[in-house]
Amino acid sequence: MKKIQKIMMALALCSISIGAVACSSGKISNEDLVKKVNEATKSVTSLKSKNASTVSIDVNSKKVTTKFDLETEMTKEPSVVKISGKSETSGNTVINNQYITTDTYYFQNNYNKQWYNLKEESTRKLYDGQKNSADYANIVELLTALEKNLKIEQKDSNYEATYSGTDDAIKEPLKKVIIASQPTSKGVLNNDIELEQFDVKFIIDKKTFNPTEFNIKTKFKVLVAKQTLNIDVDFNIKYSDVNGVKEITIPDEVKNSQEWNNKKN
Image (cartoon, rainbow, N blue to C red; front, side):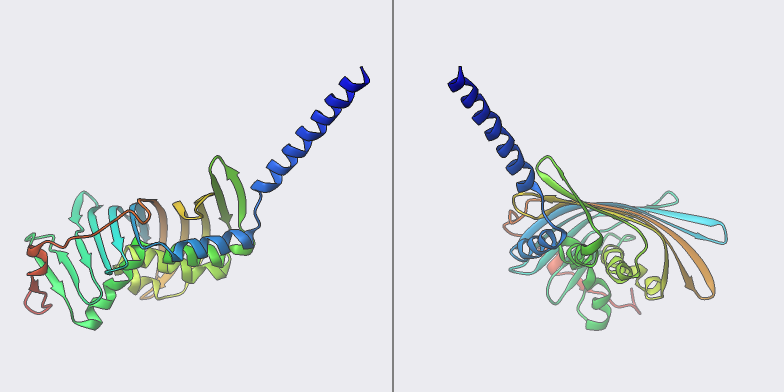
């Protein structure tokens, strides 16, 4: 009887210790999570993503809402980004098909459906930021800026890192995320913004420490030409095929396209 009691006690202690190890092994500090994500994403050489976002701008009680639906692919060697999708504003649809290389920006004109290219540096730079919408760069910068204030939870095979607040430290990283997705917003976001709400969620794979999904909901004000714009953004990106994109082939029609001339076109 005593032997049985000893065995049962040993099993009980074992189960308690196993449970304790299981619980503690899953926990991770904010600093460690951010460090591991930074390290993991540096080795990413190719990636796919889907971006679904809604931007609403209210000026003098007149609200305009634009919905974006984009898919991206990127490779680093060689540096090529492919973007395809559309945006819709008040029932009007605009196509968004692009290729971005180290020195050339290619795009399909929404009106005549012809492909054009931009090589002039100052003009091309307006769109170069979209390269970062196809990889982890801006997302990791935002995660790093929020390191000390993140709330981290385990959910199945992922870590879920969240933040809710209006810390000034997130303003510039937030601007980069929005501008990378919508370059034409740069003129507006170059001004100082007043954050009213900012909620963000990063879903990070526990094994690889690569982000798999990213969501922002934010409201802010910005003063432009003496008018206050009230802007709401709901932004979601889902990542896939990490290091699985072998090659992005730019069609001859695109490579041989006419150079865009702002004066003529």
